[in-house]
Length: 459
Ligand code: PFF
Image 1 (cartoon, rainbow, N blue to C red):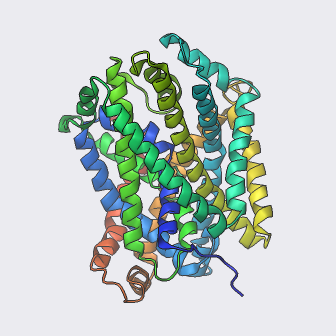
Image 2 (cartoon, rainbow, N blue to C red):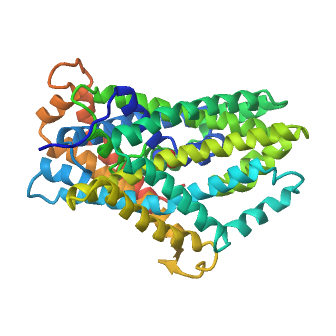
Image 3 (cartoon, rainbow, N blue to C red):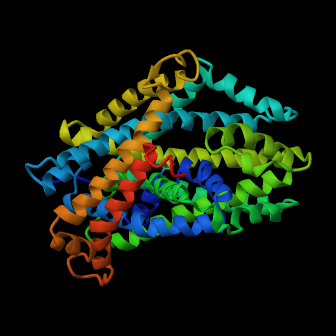
């Protein structure tokens, strides 16, 4: 008896997958990478990475999930019974859980900063003090812990309600909200005096800045941003119905993710240039979101405090939503796995994931404060989770997925799934298979070596 749910509509499926892809990576990394590494030249390279690696790997994950209608770990076992491929699925579940453990910490921070912005807490704060405010917050024993638990509970509520009533319904409301916020913030930001300099910084092509390291960095970024390699999209695809066009869905998700990433640059740089800050030295990551930008937004509206408040609240709420929808997709990978493998009710499985990730998340969070002295392989707990999942597990899984789809799976299976058993015209199937066989393993292999520092002598 198959009691598995499916997404009720194509739009719901696309919005859920886009919700997974659009996350912190779009806001805190992509714009900085673009501005500092050649503007439009970087964007062109990034789009090429998405087309050459992102779409084919995403289609493979979709194929594996939809073909088997199972959680990621079981999916590989069904497609390759009695082989070691089942470990790729298990690696996906493991990596997803790992990422969720530190992602929820940052999710909690976004909630705290939304509240700070809403209560006008940045008014009159000197530029030099934003770093102190942030470090006092993250090193506190209680505050970040409380926020991360609230964040995990929100994700829990959505996931435990199931696919149609939880994830799909939520995505249908929250993703349009996210798009509206992005557009509003872009419009406000580009209307600021001096915005054109910010846009120029973001877009002016400079191919001399595109080194081999930048290209491999762009591939790594594309991977993380599209949520590839950790079973999220494979799990979501296991709820696609048989009519879903996998190629078109992958294209839609990639386009949405890239547009949001570029628009994030249009939100950030006009205001950075408006206040005359040095954009070349902005650091991607938490420093950007929680130290540089609160200061920028505070000053960008020429003392009209209400505008500064509204803009900042909308911005932090936007990244909170982006982080939450990504966290939900990570949560779902492990929840589906536990519920199907241990035959537990969804509610209980989700609770286990919430509890385990909250506990490990608290350890990650405390590594900014009381546990800062605890080191794993020379890294704090938070950095260890971040490094190992993003730099190692993710590309390893991506590499194995492309080899699995390109070399192990029967061509007919790929053809059947990409064309919905011959009912769709998909002339690109041969190209996708070629990429999966030769180009993707080579490209991702190089990303992996680069992230391990193998090319550091070169660039
Ligand atoms: N794609 C998300 C981002 O850009 O922040 C992060 C992420 C979510 C990575 C889900 C992996 C994943 F499975």
